[in-house]
Amino acid sequence: MAIPKNALYAQSGGVTAVINASACGVIETARANPGRIGTVFAARNGIIGALTEELIDTSQESAASIALLRSTPSGAFGSCRYKLKSVEANRREYERLIAVFQAHDIGYFFYNGGGDSADTCFKVSQLSESMGYPIQAIHVPKTVDNDLPITDCCPGFGSVAKYVAVSALEAAFDVRSMARTSTKIFVLEVMGRHAGWIAAAGGLIEDEGIPVVVLFPEIPFDEPKFTARVQALVQQHGYCTVIVSEGCHHPDGTFLAEQGSKDAFGHAQLGGAAPVVAGILKRALGHKFHWAVADYLQRAARHIASQTDVQQAYEVGAAAVKLAMDGHNAVMPTIERVSDSPYSYRIGMAPLSAVANVEKFMPREFITEDGFGITDACKRYLRPLIQGEDAPEFRNGMPVYATLKNVAVNCRLPAFELR
Image (cartoon, one colour):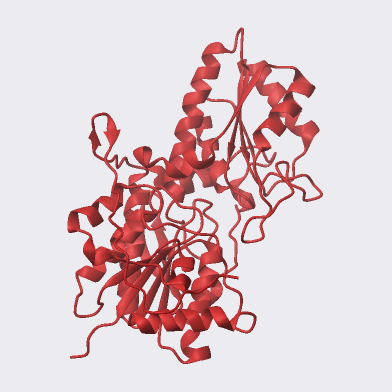
């Protein structure tokens, strides 16, 4: 029998509360099939580790340590924001990848990330055709922004949605208790560059009796209309909560929070929509306010992760390995919703050619006519995704999270410099 090829797993882009659950799914499923897949290596810091031959031997980790990844937030092997150019534009990097794959007998590549990562994975999958090296590249979906196409939802989103909804509710209770003589408006900024899925989750607090206004990237910001809506709610209830997506923008397309710089993927660097919105309300209405930026807290909050999200994250990792063993290449496991109530889903598959560099936005029918809230259809979509609690074990009052040994694989090639 032929010796099975090894696999390389890597994490990319912004990490989540459940991306390590996908890593757990990949590694445990590969270990359960030793005759089909050899050692699972992990690239340190995403595709960068693959290029620089900084590989980790996951076989050096105990079964218990790998299992603990399921309840550990962030990226156990390190992540990156680095996008491969085309083979024509940077053949050097692809030749290096082939050299690393050959040196370590790697025949499978599992890349765990969002839209830009899907693009990178798709390019790697084409090595067989463009450069004659046999590799099966499977993209493992992940993004808190929930903006990958075809899949019903993205692992990582359900947990950030749960965190935002719960945090907005708790903060709103605080404001409500103080509104008579103190703060009347609380503004919470959440992630979401072009798609308002996370902001929409904050709109769920309406069903808990909380007056809320949501600002979506899909709806251009209308200052007079917005301030009038907030004032009406303050007059009616005595207070108001505002959920603003970092991608909220003016009618001309400029972001409220644009800082004038770009990230590694060429996206505008955002941050600061909450103070901008709070300042607008202060000038227009004069009410006392507080604002907060959820930032890393929303995507790192494993202690309040959605059980649905954790399970789906694990399942897409396991499915990626099964797809590879079935001979697939350039595909991504997807989550296909079967029904809203009772909630059920199945794992499907999508070609990376239809996923890479495609963003899924909030449907207009999910946003209320005035542009400041979510519809019943949106609530039916969101609620199953935040269901269930999957708290980690606690010891001495603190969650027990995995810190892997991350034993380095000996390099077999000359050093490689990123350009």
